[in-house]
Image (cartoon, rainbow, N blue to C red; front, side):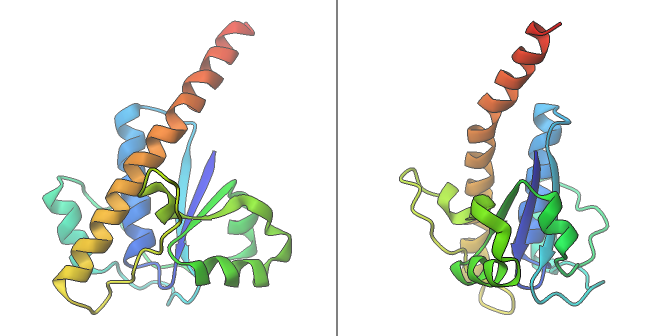
Length: 164
């Protein structure tokens, strides 16, 4: 499964989501998920937000050499699931690539049990409260996303073993 996270600048939210999911993938030891991130309005080559790096460091997660990237048609074609941070991101993606279908969803749907798709606010340049809120939402969403994907990974692995 190819998962793409999209936000505005690809330095805070989508970067954090990508890094957290990659960490979770390492924990469950699967190679069946590929993860990337991009921004709708990114300045290619920009470094990640230092406040997100500090958050990851406190969690014991090393952020690999991330540089912001602008989303491309190749990214959209590659991804089987595109998780955006805001309703506006979904709207813009569907305007840019009308045939994108239902593979675009808001990451916020994984924050609550009722799958209500909330926006994950952009904390960049805002108060510590906004950073804590975004970090908490994204961390919880990634944990819940992994829980929702895990049964499919196990089921597909069993199918492969049974077909031998």
